[in-house]
Amino acid sequence: MQADLREPEAIAAAAAALRVLHGCEPIAATFDSFRLVESYAAATREHGGEVPPAYDEASAAAARIEAALAVPYPDHSGIKNSSAGVLCHNDLLAANFIGVDGGVKLVDWEYAGTGYRYFDLANFVVNNGLEPPEELAFLGAYLEHEPLPGELAALRLMRVMSDFREAMWGVVQRTVSELDFDFDAYARQHFARLLATTHTPLFEQALKDADAAR
Figure 1: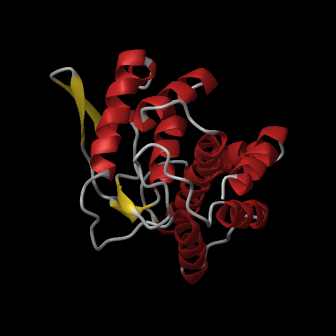
Figure 2: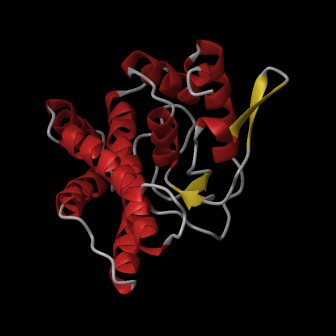
């Protein structure tokens, strides 16, 4: 199913579905990836678990991302690109998309809340393995125009936060869950990818582009 969501028609359908979702009335529940990873760390410690050393480096990168994205982006497309919050799904795995009548429907709303649209968009890109050309096509389809540098930067920076959220979800689940699943390996995989990303020139350029778009 993941491969199917990388097809041009599916990318366009997913972008259209998320554009509709983000235009819905926000709900009382909130989803803030920056605070969520902190709460996962606190919950892990409260239950006697150990937060891995990678958390500190990831937190430092997250602080830089949050600072770079603090100011709303110019609204060139009619889409409000601010951190004020829109209704987001926040768990955009391939399994949560169902094809219906040439479009897609979203299921599994456990993590839904009012949050930052670019987390949702980045979550889709990461979870479905979109390559850079597909990523660009997806964002362009969502915005309905060629992405500006600041808009693409926001997506790429929030890819790091998507991995950070998954990594810390694995950490807290390793501590509290009784399921027979290797949560430790899951966490290490996401930490490794996000930290590798933060050590690239592309990450630094995204921070600069986000800052310049203020």
